[in-house]
Image (tube, rainbow, N blue to C red; front, side, top):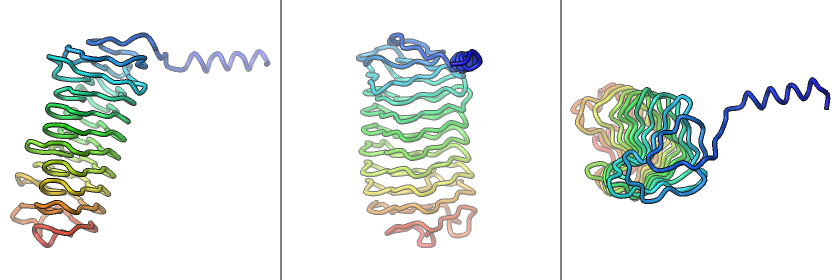
Length: 264
């Protein structure tokens, strides 16, 4: 290999972000790129782990973080632009709490058997995709901050009190290609907010409504291209008094029942 080629190769390697494979322990705050090397079980710290961007990221590498007594939050994400991926969180009150300044990414995570919310996005401009939430006692995914996205996730068998699959309460949410099935209460619940897109989701066999607006004062929503069937309290539900003439557009959905009937 020529000397110039060697120099270029060395320069390219040095430019790569450093990834640590040192042991991550219960209660750690992660500020560099880390890869988990073993399960973290019965962790009683709260949060059990903290990831702080922009330099912090965690690849769970297929391993599990399990909450023990006292751990109210599994993983809290702070700062901005942190990345969490590729593992399981089990038995936490809140599985993943996405906080800080936003622009975080949660990818390919499984959150199960939580006492409250699976993945809770309270800051803005975050994305959760390719993840599964099951067995949550309250909400599977909660999009609380503005400009948050949930894409390609699976919400199954969540218990729901009062909500179940995906809850939207922040403005300008993007909820697409998610699978919400057999949750105890609602599939996708839209609370008072505006400007959201609910597109190409499959929402089936939930215990109450499929895709529903709750509490009134929703505006400028586009709900289109979804499949919503087998939901006993209605597949598409908008209780706003002006539902047939409002700024919310329900169009091109596949469903069995709608309330009011002008939804389509």
